[in-house]
Image (spheres, one colour):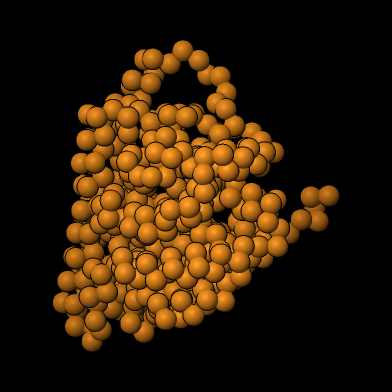
Length: 396
């Protein structure tokens, strides 16, 4: 049977990493996969994580299964981090959280939940979006559609096109929005624009699904939640797929969550029972370690303060690389305006490079970025900046 199987195309992002590993050139530079790196090109383990792991190891007495929805302490910590401990949604218990294997796992559980209960719904995604988004929802059997988002001419948000498309969304459809640090463009709505977006999505009777993978990597934990809080209106429903891969550096622990917000606590509890059936027939229950690390840090005042400081260091390094990238490109006198680099947020930036220019960067200069021109700013360093910018100038 397997002799009849044809090879699948490589993943557009992870496939680049495989090619990078096979590249023998010592000067090679990987700016494709979304992983934070320090000035030395390392992906560090946070000090607060190491301390939490030490405490967990010393106090561990069992390896028994978690419940289907995971640890209650973890779920509570996730909700309080996103909304704030005093938010009406948290106090009223009209939100429930399922611990999931990464943000990707949370998205898949959300897709299965929507397909099971609302099979005729269409899932709407920004143009562009994370390459895996549509595949996840298509694999769950849902129809997908797109709305305009990025204006390449001005390297900014196409709010007019976005609002026009969202005004065609049917009641009961799912609108997937990037909570902050839009992947791949790095372009986020302003607070005023978030209000307009929320007015349309909620007014159409659509269900917003926020992909919230980068809280704290843009402008700050509270600042990055403006879109979430704008959508979190009294009685409004939503789904939130969150992740701690980036802001805790827990990439290989696969720590995520799916949070459902309903009109009241009773509806939330009923909806959670359906989410649990989706999980049970998928991976049964979540892994424990990564979630326990997050809950330990967020629920301890000292560790939480340490995490805030380490997260700020990562965010400041990314923003510092944005500033250096802009200044270095401007010093090359390319005739282009590079100010958009520092106006964008998060790990990624749309460089404006065409696919053939991206290919040239890889083939001639051993620099790997995604073919749509997305660059991982967090992978840059002061040491490699001149070579990177000279290579970009060469392919322009």
